[in-house]
Structure formats: structure tokens, C-alpha cells
Length: 158
Image (cartoon, rainbow, N blue to C red; front, side, top):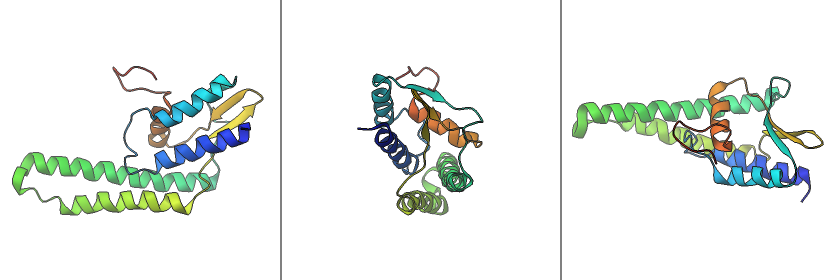
């Protein structure tokens, strides 16, 4: 498999993970880290890019939509948890349940609207693969968790 094919596979896998209804999960994704490990075995150095490796305006528009849905899911799930804690059996979470449902559906629909995904990782040198820099920290942090570059406290590295 060529490096271009490997990167396309990696980027498509990340796209599926970042458009999954469980996008806010901060755990390492084993499918992504497995593909990164294969690249390392082939002699590539995997790095997180600085500001010289950015997403295009079109890619940023897509990322902004993903951030909006991820934020809506997190907000509504937090409200549901709060309602349940305060009102227990009398909690009325229907509105928030609907917000979560709409956002999760939006993620899956957007996945289909952009079947070619985004180039999250690019080849920047003959032996270097770089994760592009995203100006939106929420999105960048989720990517760092899912790729294994960042782990939650008390969680061992992959």
C-alpha cells in the first residue's frame, strides 16, 4: 500500500470517528492508533503540526459544523444529567433528548455529505507525517485524545 493510500485510510478512519455520535468520548481510538503504528513501523515519524500546517477554509467550515454538533451533544447531555439529579423521577428531559438526537443525526448525515473526509494527517517530509494544526482547541484536543497524543490523567499511553 502506498503512503498516499495509507494516509487516505487513516484520514477516512479519523473522519468516521469524528462524525460518530460518541464524538465527545476522550478515549484513544485503537483503529486510529493501529494505523499510526503501521506508519511508524514503515519508518515514518508522526508529529503534531504547528501553525505552518493548517486546514483550508473549506475544511474549517466542516470542522466548525462538527464542533457545533459535539458541543450541542455535550451541553444537552449535561442538562439531562442535571435535570435527573434535581428532579429524579419528575425530570423532564424531552427537549434535551431531542437536541442530542438531532446533533447525532447531523453528525451522521454530514459524514455522508463529505465521503472523501478531511486530510487530518499529511506527508510533510520524506519520512514525516504531520497532524494539521486546528485553531479550534476543542476539536484539536479531541483529535489529540483519539490519536493517543494526549491521554486523560491517570490513563496510560497507548
